[in-house]
Each structure stands twice: as structure tokens, then as C-alpha cells.
Image (cartoon, rainbow, N blue to C red):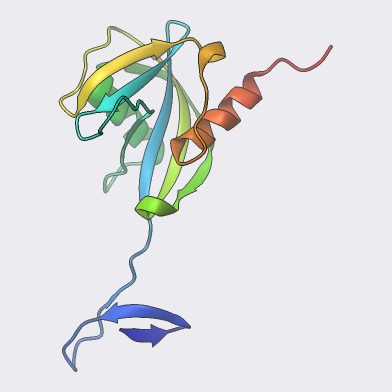
Length: 150
């Protein structure tokens, strides 16, 4: 370990090497997919228990976040993106990620991707956001959807 700018960093072990592993957060896309009036939630094959979450995926080289979001929606659900709206940025410190969240209105027939074990559609009024990661984006999106007082 080497202290660089007040933070312990992992440098290359060779004397002539100046490489430093910065361990920066990875950009991850998170999509609140609205399809036929419901929000699509999924269960990843790698997850234990009965937990469901938003569709997520890594931003790939050479694509904008919006392009990546549409790609992930298609890969994981088979749905086509009709519209996309930025929701916000959210730190996911437990996984060293920065979540880039979008609300996606999608059309087509749901076809479950290879990484998923189950998909379900829930009406927005029945959703209960969780207190970490993509749940924060869902919370903000639901709050924004509320009708203003008359």
C-alpha cells in the first residue's frame, strides 16, 4: 500500500512501474421499466432467497448511458424501449458502484434473459422501495409520480 493524496492505494510492485489501482466505482445502469402500466422486477439467478429488484447492467465501452439502458432492457426482458428519462445518480457503496437510474417505458412481449430466474410485474401503487441501491431510485421515481395537491 502507498499513501497517495491521503488515501492508501495499491501500486504496482515493480520499482519502474507507476501504475496505481485506483479502485474507482463502476458505472451501473438501473432501469425502472414501465410496461403495460406495471413495473417490471426481476430475480437474478445468483441471488439467494426471494429478492426481486430492478433490471441493472454495466455500462459498456462506446455507448451512452441511454443506449446502455435500452440494450440492457432488451437483453434482460426482450422489451423495446419507447422512451427513457433520467431519474438520478445513486451511490451503491457496498458494491463500489455508482448507479445511473432511468425510467424506461417499454413495449413488446416479455422474454426473460439468461441471467434471470423470474420476472414479475407490479402496479406502481403496490411497490415498496428498499432502503439501498436501486431502491433509492425507485423511491425517488415513485415520489415524483405523485399527483400535486389540488
